[in-house]
Amino acid sequence: MEENKNIESLLQRDEQSSKNIDSLLQGDEQGSKDIESLLQGDELSSKDIESLLQDVERDCKAIETLHQSSVKKVKDMSTLLQVDDLNISFALQQGKLCAVNGISYYVRKGEVMGLVGESGSGKSVSSLAVLSLLRPPAVVSSGSVTFEGRDILKLKKKELLSLRGNEISMIFQNPASCLDPVFTIGRQMIEAVRAHNKHYSKSHAKELSINMLREVMIRDPERVMKQYSFELSGGMCQRILIAMALLSDPKLLIADEPTTALDVTTQSQIVQILKKMQQQRKMAIVYITHNLGIVAELCDRVSIMCGGYILEQGSTEDLFYRAEHPYTKMLHKTIPRMDSPQKEPFLTIEGTPLNPLDPPDGCVFHPRCPHCMDICRREFPPKTILSLGHSACCWLLSPHGSNPVSINGGVSYSG
Ligand SMILES: Nc1ncnc2c1ncn2[C@@H]1O[C@H](COP(=O)(O)OP(=O)(O)OP(=O)(O)O)[C@@H](O)[C@H]1O
Ligand code: SF4
Ligand SMILES: [Mg+2]
Image (cartoon, rainbow, N blue to C red; front, side, top):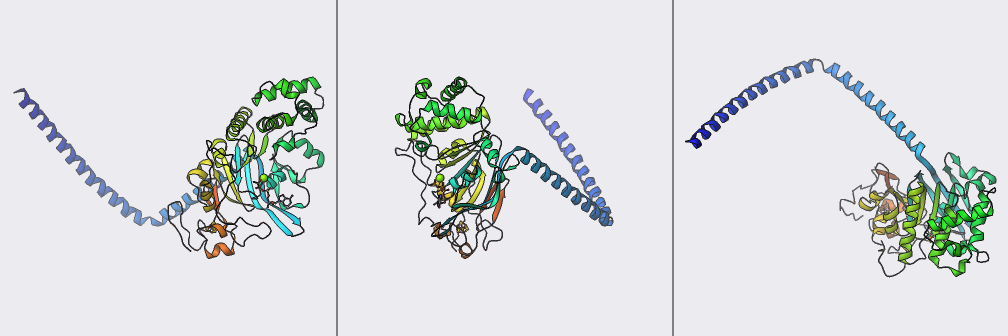
């Protein structure tokens, strides 16, 4: 009995719902009639609509311009280092060697930019130019290096000396040759502190040096201050160089392959120290390396270099998950594992590495590229913007190429 009543009430509710649906449909019918009549009205005033659309388009353009100028303003405010169209060559007896070909990149305050590429790709030479440290036969033939609005390549000697070490520090590629074996570590550190802060007493400089050694995880820094570089391991020397580079609390640190000569455990410790120091001090770093594993660990953005050109640039995520350039994709295959038993290997890509005195025409990577097309042998590819902050120079990606395709989508090309 109870069950029957429930069924009856359910049926009544169903009937009510059907009525509601009916009335809704009738409403819809009315709505359609309204829309139809509106459309007829629209047809009559199509000229008005056209002019309205033009107004909207104009407004959109104005908003876009405003947006672009605000993006530029924000970028200008946060950019610390800007390298623009930098060209560097060596005037050698055998001929002109073009080491850096029109590279451009920027580093924002507090970010880590990785400069990655095979041996001889121009990483060190371009970074030495940032500190205006190149000497003949090197020639900066064109381009600019701007640090906080100042063109470094045009600074006077005195201004450069104050910039180096105070605002920009560099850890050079070969740690052993950077420490003088004739003087104790303490003497070299104290001198480094007082070179930039002449009014500091020796005891204050010593105290600062000891504290800094402690920050880079050197045990018993008082004892290390009395030692000579030849008494210390490669990892210890590298930590001391990091400590010396950071003594002046620079805004930018250029670290040129600071872990290459070290075993993987020490490499990993050094990377962790740099990461900690960078985060604590909100310091920007240009980190030069062959090792994409370290890039993943440390860098916010990456520029991939080959034969003096930057072939792809983007955020670390772009370069790892959305790499488009064939060279970057081949570099991925060379990623050394942190738990690999050997020392860090150099990036090696199959094929003959390029001869810098006789570079190929067109795309610098064409002799080794599996996707090479005719146009690649003739012309260097223009830069294609792939997404905000992500770009690459490859004819496969260029809308001006003979057959643009997305190679990320797995489309292979034989041309
Ligand atoms: N003093 C020099 N005289 C002549 N050529 C040079 C000199 N220094 C560098 N080069 C050339 O400039 C090019 C770029 O060299 P660079 O040292 O910048 O390469 P790199 O990318 O730092 O390589 P690595 O990873 O081996 O350190 C290379 O072809 C190199 O042979
Ligand atoms: S431009 Fe051509 S040769 Fe160069 S990377 Fe792209 S496909 Fe390869
Ligand atoms: Mg180098």
